Image (cartoon, rainbow, N blue to C red; front, side):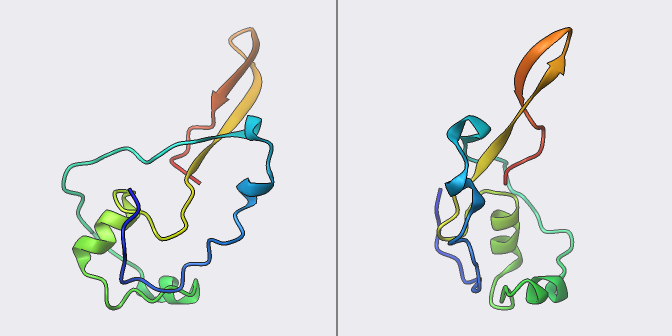
Length: 99
């Protein structure tokens, strides 16, 4: 799933998941999608986040931000959710994509 990317500036070295007990998350990979397409991309926001995306093609951006390719050092997780639902205590995923 890891792929090389022309996008520079990723700062994924200090993931907070490395400090969480494993009961709080599951290591999962992103769902697969056929032919994702880039509709719009905010280059100013990417630059403000320290990412240099100008050398990336629309296809590369679509693959990256749809989760088909991951940036170097990415460790995708889904957070656990626990609470009282359906009349009893349960542990579920939290419904978001990936962190």
